[in-house]
Amino acid sequence: MSDLKKIRDEFISKLKGKLDLAELNQIKSDLFGKNGLVSSQFKKIGTIDVSERKKFASDLNIIKDELHDLINFKINEIEKANINEKLEKEKIDVTLPERSFVRGKIHPVSQTIDEISSIFSEIGFSVEEGPDVENEYNNFTALNTPDNHPARDMHDTFYLDEKKERLLRTHTSPVQIRTMLKDKPPFKIIAPGRTYRSDSDQTHSPMFHQVEGLHIDKNINMGHLKGCLNYFIKEFFEVKKIKMRFRPSHFPFTEPSAEVDIGYEIKDGKIIIGEGDQWLEILGCGMVHPNVLKNVKVDPTKFQGYAFGIGIDRLAMLKYGINDLRAFFDCDYRWLNHFGFDPLDVPTNYRGLSR
Ligand code: DAH
Image 1 (cartoon, rainbow, N blue to C red):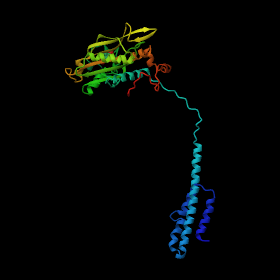
Image 2 (image 1 turned 90 degrees about the horizontal axis):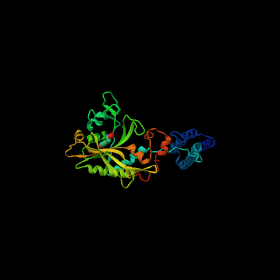
Image 3 (image 1 turned 45 degrees about the vertical axis):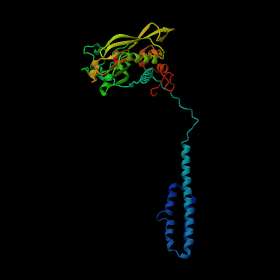
Image 4 (image 1 turned 90 degrees about the vertical axis):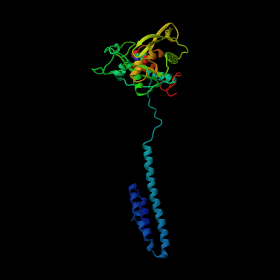
């Protein structure tokens, strides 16, 4: 029997047995590796007598293909079986019932802030933010608030150090200062956020929310302030007409200053905004005091404007019929479920911030 035939028969019978991947790879290298049995036969071709060379080469190629194909077939078979076994083990049971999940609700205060921001953004206001922990300068001094002003009292303000240099901001007005210090006029911004005062009863909470407004440009007057607030209140309460009155007031950072009331009446136990003879105070406002502008290096002979501060929680309570302010901050899941907003079920009047 020729060498070739011997090699062939020996390995064909070996390959009939049950072999694992490692054994098959070993056989592959025994035959076709650098010094493998078949590879060595190829090296021999040149030494064979010319008369037999052609036949030898042809037989060798046939045997090489036969063994090679058989080994690859067996390797393939094992790999396929491995994959099938893995798939079988990792099979997903699509008949399993889905896991139940609870969809969260948007807090009425967040919803109200979104609505306010989108209403003001439609008339050119952008949204600014400031930190809850403020310094005394931004919260009081830069806003023209004298040292003996009652708002600075320990009973009203949460100070964070003995020197009274750092505090929890008592209003969003310091964002006016921050905005004007970092940029050049004109300014047209609102700044919603958390504010803090030492106060707690059914209508006051130590933490509450305000939105500040500031519009500074050349030739801005009180008419602009009135127009802006009138537009906002109508849009917010979704009414065509609104009764609004400006009551003279005092804030250190505005001159003149006013508080704004809106007309309302109670009909069948429900509050109707914009009609009736009753008045409800909803915000403070005025023309920005020249001293404030000087403090932020804005020339009050060239630029002027208005500012306002609105209590957000109050607006949310009015619009959504919530009567106890403290519930806003109780984190009662049942309350939130009732008064909160479904994040996927957008109310019809909601414009969305991105519009
Ligand atoms: N900061 C005032 C407060 O908390 C509200 C306010 C009044 C803000 C008049 C203003 C303003 O910007 O011009 O009571």
